[in-house]
Image (cartoon, rainbow, N blue to C red; front, side, top):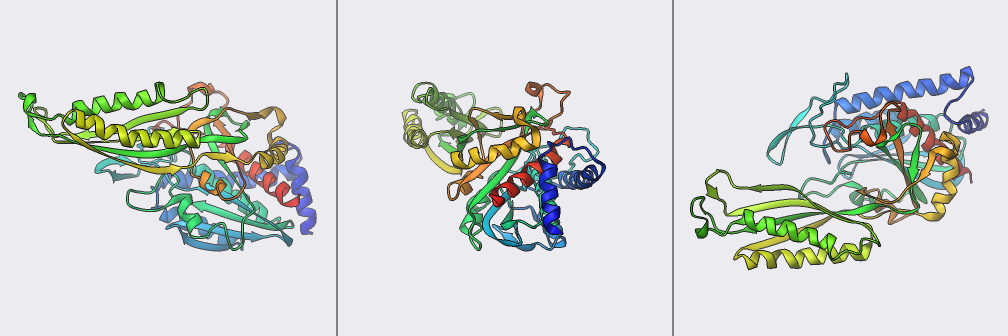
Length: 426
């Protein structure tokens, strides 16, 4: 009976996502309604990196209700579920990230987040401004479908990962810590798949790139120490604010004058500067925080070393001192070319060949890359922009207006389910 179910599921998935037939509609309508409900719940209850306590409980309870073996508290709040097929075979991992961002939501939605917190000593809202709520709900839906139709060879490991956006300073977290704690072992994983909802791509489209798809990311902290003075007597100061302007300009010359941009892209952005407390006091210290994005390992090391050497010398030239700390956030997201080529037909079964689109690399970053540095992996973008909105006008990720269409969720469920069945069956 189970064999009949799985064959039936394969047939359903091969008919594209506009499935006809009353029974087929009932199957996918039922799971779609659940996934949307789960997503709205998670969106209303966002949690920051390494603090996804309630999200983890929500996921764990669902997996246990399906009879899936569950391990909790992996890399602080991660949840891992293991579903065995009915015969031996390969081990496939499917990953969803769970954390939200310190962003105050501006959308007028019935499931809008109103949660607030203190982040870096500033009051802010908490919002799923990158779509991780959709990833969790989609993978919960895949787990339910496959647990009820598990007549496949091999094993599926469901990885619900905390801290993709980066753990708080001084803490470990994310994919790196999950790997360190053995998430790819017992049983040993052969390959891993993941997706990311994409604002800027219409619902019904899927985008991918073989090889390097997303950039590595590094977080830098530069601290400049000068000499405090009255604002009316700047000659008595060593002004860290003026010096920071020189540092920022010089950082950009690393991109415009020292990086071979015809080879790969490089981005250096300063996202935060803090210094001073009063209008007429030149402060003693300044801190700036930013990100480095590279798509080539040699370029990554070159930029890293140049910043560490250049910044203290600039500060010294103006009679100040400066320290530089650079911490890795993600490696290059690298889609194994052979695995990618093998799995593209599976996505085409779901949305049609014309809607599976190869793209150029992007300078966003993903710590899914750390899984791919250990085992072959395939990562793709799932369209989330409503069809009546111009793709180029859709609000960006990590912004208060970020929004994705719930219609994308069932396509994500079908895509990961199809990939799983095809990979394990072959």
